[in-house]
Length: 308
Image: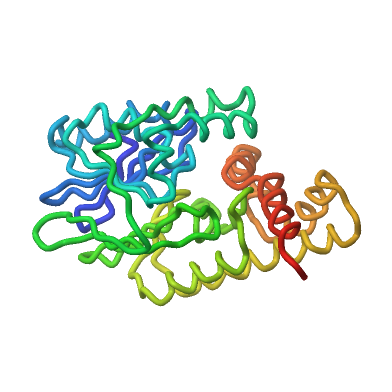
């Protein structure tokens, strides 16, 4: 299939074709003795992911585990649908997100407030998962991939309070979710993801430091794809966070409202990102993944509850 890319080590990148776009959100299949899907993509992507797994020989009773880095709808919106397709799979998530997978009503209501009419087009509806099938992780945990291979889970908040990074014991791959930001392979751009309400600069920098300390061989971004240049990429991830926070703080200190703060930060960061100088489709893709309004709103929210 043209949306499945082998990455070595029995790892396959799956383009979930979020909202019909290519290169927006990736799921990953680790095809060992106990096949494991990392990230489901959105609810509307679930059939795309199922077809990809089928093309790799994974049938309805073959998938052992589904694990999500966090419960935002672009990563976990398809969990309920995928759980229905694969009745034997255990669903693994951090303990702070588990209840929202069992009962998504509050999560969907808040998503509706944020996205409005775009919700159905971008994400669809997160279906509930039987609570008995959900395994809630603490600050660390282990997922058995078979044959002694494991995924070690490491709590990594800052982007979201229910976020984990996942380290593959065989390949050294680290699934970074959104904790290291959004990477655009076409241009090599890296931009922070700082949406409200959970963004916290100090906590986010701590999670990036944890990722560095784990010494991964490769970073697998949910947005989007593999990156082998690990230490410089994580350094840049931290630098981008600091720059966006510094600029947003300046806008706030000048008394700018949210719209004017967004305009200022967008203007002053534009030169950092080749994507915004590329063709219109690439720029649109970048804004959809890590929009300046969402980023600045999340930073403002953090500044409002953080003493200077």
